[in-house]
Image: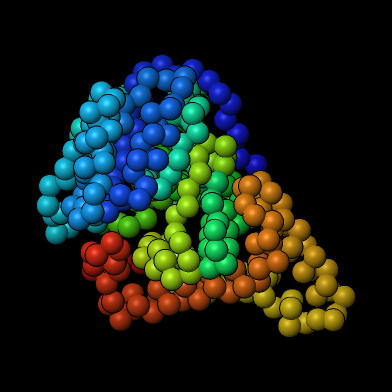
Length: 342
């Protein structure tokens, strides 16, 4: 469960903070302001407006007028064989001038030392990619039932936790909310163009780097950034559903995941009051408590843990069923053909 916790450091070279934005008027100003407050490294901030219909581009233009480090670009029409965010990120990389490419979502708020710490860590360990799960801001019961599964599955079930010591592509991990790439390595593997059809682009890019012989690592993202990714249960369900078949919801993998998660976190409740069931529940909640404290998530989500596992499995099975009948995945007004299960 140990992930590297980065310290405040100075970083050499320019860090390009790259933000794809589609209808992000509620988020973009705070996101850019936090990025501009970065210290320890020279930064530029490039926002790619991806066909927004709200006031996103007007807000960014105002910020660019006030600070020359900010630039606004407009994404060209989406080609038929790309997903939206991946296409915007590829176009952002073309606009970037930096030695380091730091891709963040518009709902992410970087800590002042995050960009420098990630670049310095990547340089020191010769990593092509560094990623982390930001501290998740959880503001509703629906979010508390779903969002904590991210860190629980990463820290509790991924062998090596995405550490650089594990070099296998199938053991790679990443969070698309916070991804730093070394520019030359990024270009050598084809960048986002090499994973153009996916929705889980962080994970796909990490696997691509490793398949090409580069090192990637997941670090402790809680001190580096915060993010409120969804608001309410309906957004959480739709958001996790969209890329499930690129992760757990596969015909071969999901039955195994169901046996592991259901057997460890749901079945003991059916065996109460047997002492073995009590022991299993205490161990389960102990692990969940340790992960929650490590990820700096709200304590009140811990008693919800069995329901979190039940909802997580329900999302995965629903995603697999939709994939099996050819239902397209969709996000922010776009629909994509059902992707091939991993």
